[in-house]
Length: 248
View: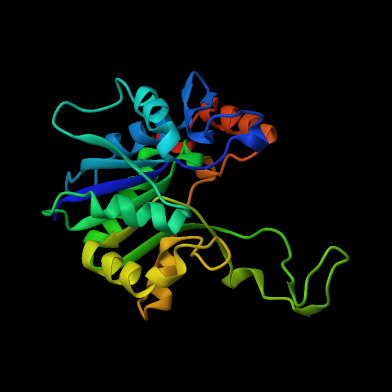
């Protein structure tokens, strides 16, 4: 099975204090999208499988900036292509899927905002898909107590219940899929893609909505999402810290 990746790079950098997309904001010496792309291209599955094609989605007005940010990131035999994304993350992933080579069997979907997801995490997701799971997500145990609330507004809302933490996971990317399963899920959920209010927040959610089953593998704290200046400080600290057990 051949592996390809769709890397979404359309998030706003406004909460980081930048006018350009978050993906081209420099952190730890390089744009976020470059860090994310390098991790995807460096990963090796247990049987040696690796990403053989990378499609990056970007806003139409920032395609040149994202392309420039990826300069020098590619591997000689792995094409890296930047395409225009859509109005929502779901629409952007669909655009990336449409641009993948026809011979791809396994698709990774990754967010550039999770720029420091390590190659070992990428490989873990690929291994699980190649082991027979149609949809795979990395997740971390939830350490906070979580409440489900109803009718939430600026003044708050009533608690419905308190789910037990041992059955909860905070989901990360990259997420991995058998290509036909992901294409089918996007086709079934295409009517949701045009509006942020209805669009899926992750691709595993589309697979679930289409009746598919999703498998969770252990996540990695280095794959935390970068949204605010505080997240940048934490990401740089994690990036610079020694890796427990020597795992890359």
